[in-house]
Length: 115
Image (cartoon, rainbow, N blue to C red; front, side):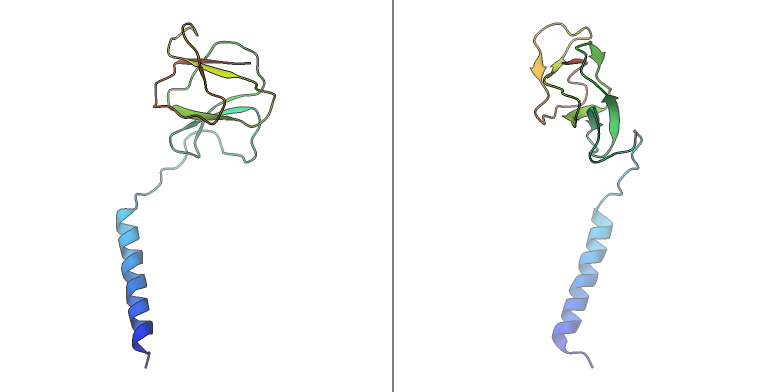
């Protein structure tokens, strides 16, 4: 016969597992490119942290559209010195620096330049 402490521990473990299973949502499958770690170039991610929604291989200072679902970015390699985000569709107006592990609400930035 088990001792009372073992029975109590087994009961608490069962309750914990049942509670976590019922309360944690299922994680959606990533719809973007596969995640690599380490990755290469500038990678834009959605708010779901492992979904890649855009990539840029090398800095070129060209005005590009921010992917609709992008909420953060990380420059893994390639010499990206500055990534400026703009709230306009043509990279005009006041830029915001995005290259220092910075996140934003979905749709906040419309365009960016990576130099």
